[in-house]
Image (cartoon, rainbow, N blue to C red):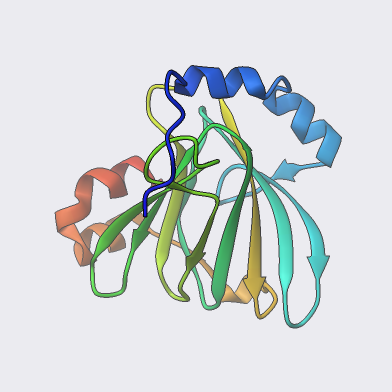
Length: 171
């Protein structure tokens, strides 16, 4: 079932509903740059069974392709819809729009299976915007379970997806 669409509401009107800018959110939540992935984060909970973070992405940055050995759940909190691009180990590309469900084909939560390449960006055409998300990893996140993609490796493995790989990876 498709979520209802509010008539007359545009993507620009969502931004007006979010009066804070990215710098204010970064300061208010104590977010730090997330390198080498991209974006900003603050860990809010950590245990052996689960880790939770706030994650902010802006229209001037992106979360480059990476994968985790564990399942990750994204939660959309506020801002502009964000596109989550997923590459399965079999080479299937799927795009999920994380948002507040004011528009068709958005979801406020999505589960990324373990070992799935993932990258995140603000939807195209929306300048000076941001998305505030939560991410929960289970079992708890450990850096040795994180792998950042090498562009040339992804292109060799998934040449049919060269456009999105070139856009959301770095050398």
